[in-house]
Amino acid sequence: MGVRANRHRGEIEAFFDGERRVLCLTLGALAELETAFAVDSLEGLVERFSSGRLKADDLIRIIGAGLRGGGNLFSDEDVAAMAVADGLAGFARIAAELLQATFGNGEASPNPPLPHPA
Image 1 (cartoon, rainbow, N blue to C red):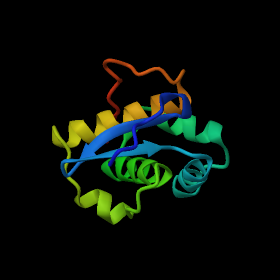
Image 2: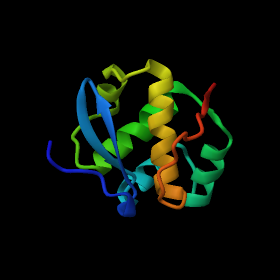
Image 3: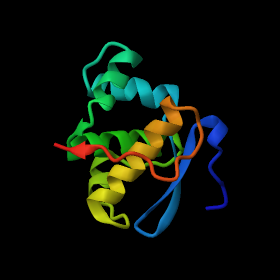
């Protein structure tokens, strides 16, 4: 894959099953998450994600939406079967970095906060 992530567009890169992928929470991906989390606004998503109480299923949904927003054709079931470095902690870091790139200032954080899986 030759495409690199563009932080100014809210994109990040992560390795899944040893393959580098670009993730982005596009407007369509955010709408998908609003429906999945049964919230009626972006503010509702921010409140949900700010709680720090994310379940494994939440990580799958966030990362799946980010992968699809980045042009990858993976279902949430595909994401659930993927492997990343550091296992659950790796998935949590990817989700935190993606949320920071989307809702934060777009700068890469050297140590993004880890959501606490519930």
